[in-house]
Image 1 (cartoon, rainbow, N blue to C red):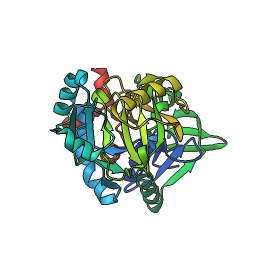
Image 2: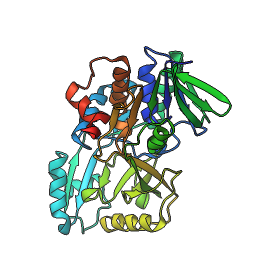
Image 3: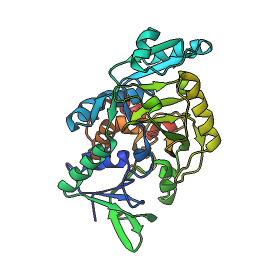
Image 4: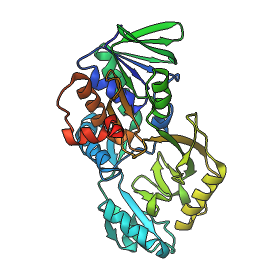
Length: 356
């Protein structure tokens, strides 16, 4: 018997379990043999407050102090670059993200390999890297220090509502708790159906990634993350190499995702058009799933049919940066406290919005 069972060991589940563990006994279940195996461990992980829907931006702002206190942020910066024919989307992007346009001389001082085809650039110095592994390990330590449990290799096979609460079968073991937090990422709708709860229509979208050697042997430590207009591609320095993504959003079933070679090649070609250094064979390639609700805002709160079933889902591409505030909100929901993020934002994140 435990107070709350959290299903899912990515940043969503870990942040919620860590916040919950301050006041209740928590058991977190992760199907894989390690936490953060899927989307959380494959994320480009940038902290940029003006990224995402208004509700996501509210969570981002509310998460900044926690990220800083945990020591997981480091300087990175963000730059959008465009060719002449991309001017309209470029202008829309810098307005939406409140970026400052810079000269091409300044842009090439930041990223010296930009090609002559690039004629516009905008930059924001405040975007920061997030050390996702440190973030997750800190929360795991917090959960355990507070008497909670993190159980990996724990695939849920059956969930039943009884008079004592939720009864859950994991292999040969049985767990019971009055409250479930569904933080199962791409599998969140499937977990809901196992529990007899109506799914929300969450859609996993594949995103592919290639790891390239440092172009031209450059030192990338101080390069910003670079985006094409409309997030048509992006490139991010990472441990001496460069991550390049086509930034695709292709619907797929929940799975251990792998990259589509053709989509990845098309994305690398868009990146190649922006730089002078020839793209070589990737060091590695992979893919992750970014799971969105129909309105692309996170879903945080009690299910309308059964308030003991709590959704922590639909993080999309914003789960890492918004996780401290999202996890705290789940703890506020369970404790029936006034939400720290404010009643208006809480209502916009609630699953009840799909029932109106």
